Each structure stands twice: as C-alpha cells, then as structure tokens.
Image (cartoon, rainbow, N blue to C red; front, side, top):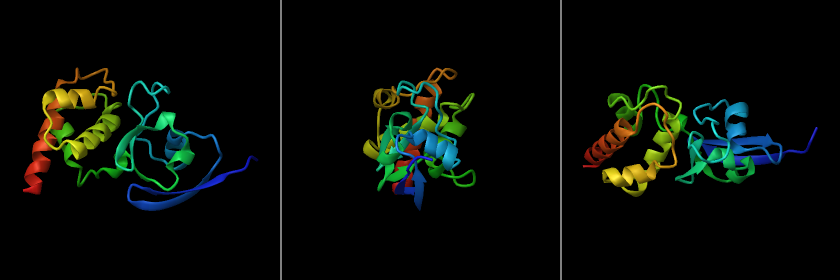
Length: 161
C-alpha cells in the first residue's frame, strides 16, 4: 500500500477531508472516491471541457489537475451549483432553452457559464462563445447553449434588482 496525503477542502459548500495517493488526478478522486460524476473524462488532455470544475471561483480542468492541487481550496462541481428542486439559473436556462441533448457536455458547459457570469454579468454573444470555446459539444451546435447563457445572465440580473 502506498503512502497517502490528507486533503482538506471545501467541496460544494461542505468541509471535506480525505486521504488520497499522491499523483492521483482530481477528476478520479471526484468521480471514484467522492461519487461526484457530473465532471466527465472525455479527452483526458484538456481539450474538451467535460471535466470542468470551479476552483476558488475559476473554471479548471480536473483531468489536468492533481488531487493535491485541491488542498485548501473551495471546489464546486456541477452538482454543487444547484439541485433538481432549486437549480442554478444557468442550469434552469439550459433546460428551458433545450441546450441539452445527450447531456454529456452539460455539466462542463454550465460550470464554464457560471464562471463567465461571475466575471461578466452582462455578456454579449461573442463573449459567451469565447468563454465556452474550451467546451466541446457534439450535439447541439452551440446556438441553444449561447441562448441559455444569455437568458441566465438576464435572470440573474433581474434577481439582483
């Protein structure tokens, strides 16, 4: 049995502590050890965005991160954005605008959209496209996804008013 390191982080709003083997990737720990399966491994090389998570409020690719890099950080996965009963405005907009087909890219897309809207609450179409350019979708053609992000931005602005 190899040595482990103790990670302490805030995961989806909950203080979390766990032991992991050095060298394990963040995506493997999230999915295999913690049962958080929204982040997907598709390319394994940081090209598709399916594994996107928020680390200290910024989008990161969990397939390219060692689990040890999460130590002491605030980590949010798509599961931590909202619930079925109370979805995040981005999640609600994706559903309302048909921005989900197979759903494989949806968690990564929603995480990237939340990151964008935290930095740019009133983006235009080009800003949305640029922010989501690291996330690949093979089903929707992106139009409905961009529409959903813009609708979420409007909803979030109205909620702040």
